[in-house]
Image (cartoon, one colour):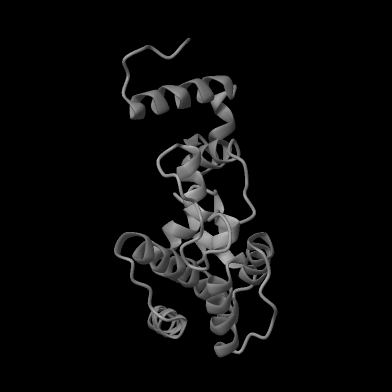
Length: 199
């Protein structure tokens, strides 16, 4: 049965789930010893979605909720970078305001930009992690791999990444909207302080 017109967003979602349930076949598959099992139904419905590789970065992070949200947007390439705003004809100039070298895309802003790469490098070095800073996808893969472990160092890597992305985004916004930019050292100190407080 088609979804009726005029329904709110939430009612449309409920209607879609009704269709999913009716197409799942016999409801007896969710019954054990005469009792309906919500967990079985939930697992059945949950398998409908696609799995993403970065779920541990977002779901297992001990970083602040604001930073996790910004990372979630960045992982989906949904941040309103200057390049995206130019494509929507909102602005004309899309040059990165932090390094003034090229267009500001997500991949440039997180960690191809010399300013942001310096911040991430300092955060890693001061945290005792000695590795070269790579491109956005390389850093995401590194954090994904580190997030598989439950050790405190893995949690720290995850938090460092989330807080760094958030702080770079805040620095970028501060430069765009107020023409003010803190030094990379003060940004690094704030990142390390936030991670220490959330640990």
